[in-house]
Length: 249
Image (tube, rainbow, N blue to C red; front, side, top):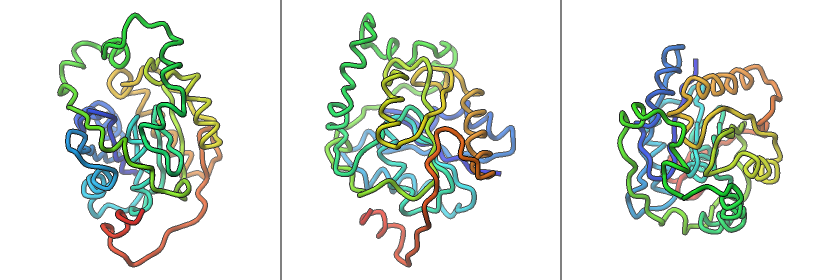
């Protein structure tokens, strides 16, 4: 069975994965929920180190699940940890040298938001509109998100050689599905899969979310070129420590 490693989005908590984790664990998989240092004035190296520390010595059937902001981080983890599969969910897809701040402008995110003609940009409108109140009350409130991470150029010169799949959320108001689909096609050259739910589908649709993750893992194990798939293109070697590899990624 697989070990799924959950990387939350901006201002989030590892606890946000509790319902998806329960679904996966009930089916025999393991789940590691990472708390990213989003409320600290730190950059990509510290975010990557947080994931590596949480993974520990696990190195068999690791599946990274990166939501939203964590799309900037998960590829860096793949450079230093043996990851079998990376699943991006409603995630940012960076280009080499692009900062997180530039990403919003380059992808015309503001135009995508405006085109929906939403009544406001409140969190309840953009992020949690489809999350049941009792579920929302069961998880911690968002943390402060610092901007340091977004100010750094993305350091990789190419996408990592790790099988990658992309899930977009059908009812997402923050990252609208049609807009994000075009970005994924353009930047990764793949066709994303679609799941129900808004930007916080891990809370509003945990069973469907878990079903999609298991399907991605099963397709990967079978070697199937399913939609939302970037094939593995080689392996990484080297005797340097994980810390050295993180800082040179």
